[in-house]
Amino acid sequence: MTFRILIVDDEQPIRQTLSFTLRRQNYDVDQASNRREALERLETNNYDLILLDMRLNGDSGMDLLRYIKKTYPQSEVMMITAFGTVATAVEAMKLGACDYITKPFNRDELLHRVKNVLRTKQLESEVKVLRQEFEEKYGLDNIVGRSKELMKVLALVRKVAPTDTTVLITGETGTGKDLIARAIHALSRRSERPFVSINCAAFPEHLLESELFGYVKGAFTGAINNRKGLLQEADGGTFFFDEIGSMPLPLQTKLLRVIEDKMVRRLGENKPTHVDVRIIAATNNDLYEAVRAQQFREDLFYRLNVVNIHMPPLRARRADIPELANYFLNKYARRDGREGLEFSQEVLALLINYDFPGNVRELAHIVEHAVTVCPGPLIRPEDLPQRFRERSAASQPVPLMPQRSRRQQLEEEERRLIIQAIKASSTIREAAEALGMSRATLWRRMKKYGLSKRLFVE
Image 1 (cartoon, rainbow, N blue to C red):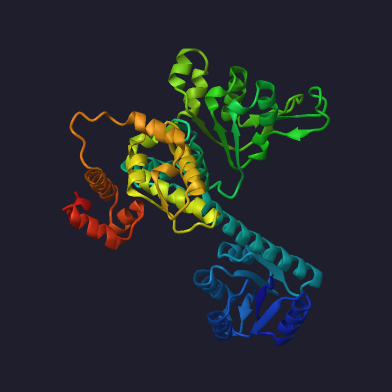
Image 2: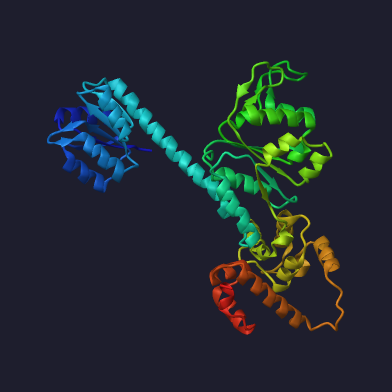
């Protein structure tokens, strides 16, 4: 990456010396002798760094600094002057200058400061890109669905994310509690710092303790060197405790101290270390009942449950099923090079009427299976996992009336699906996307079933 620098100084020897010095370091350098030339350069070029003289002929470098930081905030400005005082340095910094150097300047010192400024600018740019990628991957846009139940959850996520409040996410297995935790982190001021997670149910007590808190050499058999715990690795960021209800009581006591004192102590170490972490926890257990059964500390429960975000099961937000199913369909079809796959209306009806004990995770598995085995462009019931078909058939009510024709059943089911999608959407485009059809097709189906566009505002 080649950095571009603009030198603004009314003394030609200074400009030439600076230009020669910087070009030898492979910087792309332009010059301006006054405010007018500087503004002309700025209008047509993007500069990473501007070296600006404090005093220009007939103009104030400080005034130009104000203008540059207001109009071109992406450019860093380093002030250069022969009249260096602490007062002017402080004023320039307050106005947005990144550094300050006096004339006559030392060549090595100047290059060192320029390199530091540009290295910091490059790092900030890289962090910004990484943050955007993280938000795209884990932010709210990656959480699929438009049901009222999900919208309430996301509204609470937006409120709590900018704070440092401890959050407890509850809900059945497979509802997406980890996605909510990552979204909170991605939208927080800690998003550029680590997001570290652990599944408390995946480790026995002694291993969970060493993973969380770390250890020093000789703390136990096999501790052959010092190791930081995951809580220290998350310093400045967010720590996510998944399945917090499975944490043993002795470790609950240690976690309570971390929350209250912001200190951790490695196994075998006497001196505690300060950590700055935001705590998010998740559970599929009833922690109220666990507290009553003395299986979970009451004081820790209230420390964790400052804000509770409950993820509803998929059966409680059936309006999201078509959109989620199409999301997974496109994901796995792209992976396998099978773009263009679609669900039959019969399959969509089966999915919507199924209770999904495994929630979104189970839906993803079912769709992945169907994409893998489907022989043609249309996914049919026989492409779904056999266990799903058996459960789905068992859950269907036994008809008490003479059965209607298959076509009538499908048409009624399609009409019901369309009404659900319309009521869960604000525009025809959203409803069509959720159903996996074009807007023109949706209009035709609405006309066929006598559905009014007034449904969108009811």
